[in-house]
Image (cartoon, rainbow, N blue to C red; front, side, top):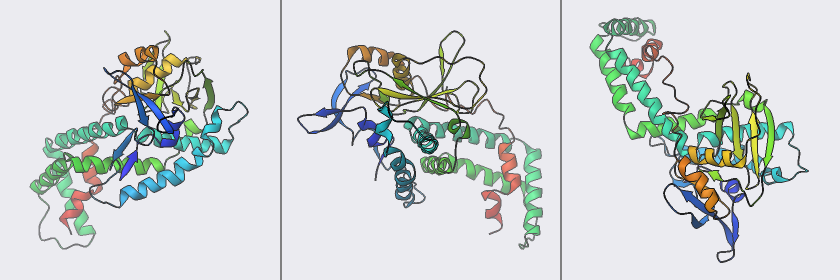
Length: 342
């Protein structure tokens, strides 16, 4: 099943009319390559089985249907009207866009790549647990009491070795590509149930440019930054972070600039097209797209490509302390505990 990391309808707002194919096409910009003409909006950002779950083949179709019906279609009904000066967004429109932007952020390849780093943190936490004999003993005792409390037959106490085997099996499972893909699909479904209140209640503005100096759209089009006191931009901050700004180009000439409802220490500045286009390249995993071939535009994009790697140098969770995370999971009665008394 083919999935799109960026919806075709959104890509179409950045395309040109091709007289040969009689269809909408894009110019593709990539690191170290000359701009390439004629990319179909149907094929750009399309990846086979992107939302596939090795543990449940039915999930991909169900997830795609929800994305289309609950998040994409409600916004695509008015997305092209955002470029009209006469169009005014209602509170309902902003709520729909909030959910659209949240899912658009989570479905990018850059975001999917962050799942691998999150799992690496979980593996490190599990290994830290395995190195602590005192905690292993506490878990073994706790599991013994829980099995008795639940009324399951038990002729002996749970051993430390059984706890170790459970933790080692968890590590082996987390290291598989199958687990990483399932974990990513899990994160998409969690995101579908979440409404980002600071984003929804923030200050929504529209930036404009001309077709001669167009906005581009990258394969990870929702970007975040904080502008520092010296005017420079720091990429990759969470939607609820102090001073964060959220950017989403919606056409070649218009771009959403959102100030989530968070504490602000600096007065925001109005971004210029070059800043936005450079950031699109920085967040892109592979490419940015535009309606035309422009050497000046390519010059802006080339040095920025691939600067932001989610989970590595942006949106990283490594600043948090996870030393006790797996110990707490085992003590709460996770899947490893349940396997002992089935």
